[in-house]
Image (tube, rainbow, N blue to C red; front, side, top):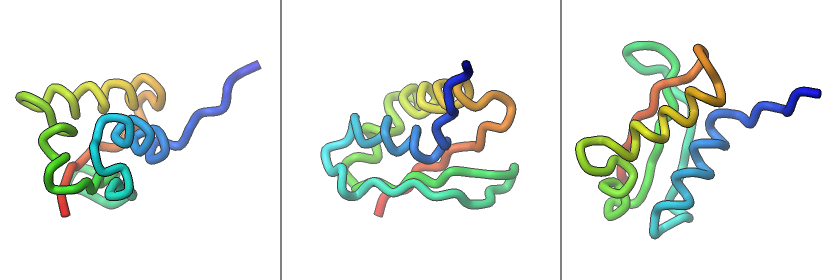
Length: 82
């Protein structure tokens, strides 16, 4: 029996909500980027650095987890604050 795959936006929302201070400000929604499907991540101004991490390590790790769960159909991630 194969486990059901969690939608990419829900997976990203779960991960990002676990590391930010203002959980209520987290919004993840699909959009179309320059290179195809993208998940836009909106967080509070003070949490943007936490999500991106030093030299982008945190966001790259989140992308890696999503890629493991979704394979080749993984959307790109884009972080904004607002």
